[in-house]
Length: 112
Length: 113
Image (cartoon, rainbow over all chains, first blue to last red; front, side):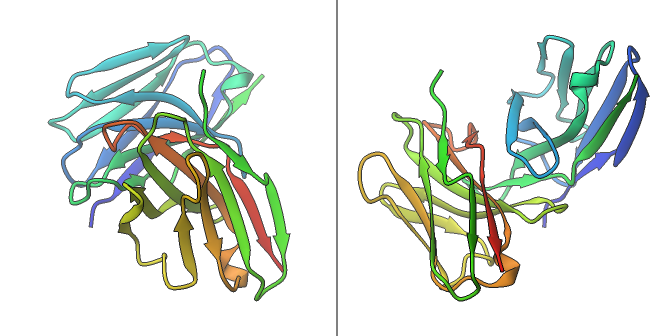
């Protein structure tokens, strides 16, 4: 079965510093979603990447999709307290037309 | 901007009771989904719905679960006889064309006591 592995599991970063979160698939990636979640709450859509090599940015968050490595990275520049939360990656399952599978999440804490 | 809405935001029910979770997908979307997330665990796919029928379901989606699109706007998930282990956040999602472009609602937190 296909798995999405996120690294690191948790991250504590000084406010103002940059950080990167990775999401690696055990099988081919046909697209990837990044979401943010506050613990026990809803999913906030960040970005969707559909093509290999695609890179998208929104405010201080940039995400890239590396098809060959079956990996996506999420980079936050000059982190702020508002960036704190759990970052989830989701991807279409290769043997399904409909399902998204999910990583376990990366918990980000921003130290003031 | 159109968004997926879900009601209620929080539902508390006793074990064995039936619950119906409601979703209003984005109006021109054709594909509909339910996912769940047990607290502290991964988001899990439950079911997808297209053209008024289930297109795919997971092992979690057993006979206790059913979905319906009773009118042109609502999409519901029914759990017939809730169990303690059904306690989770339930997310509805919809997609317009490509089944991969899924937009999620804010979730319904279901607590079974």
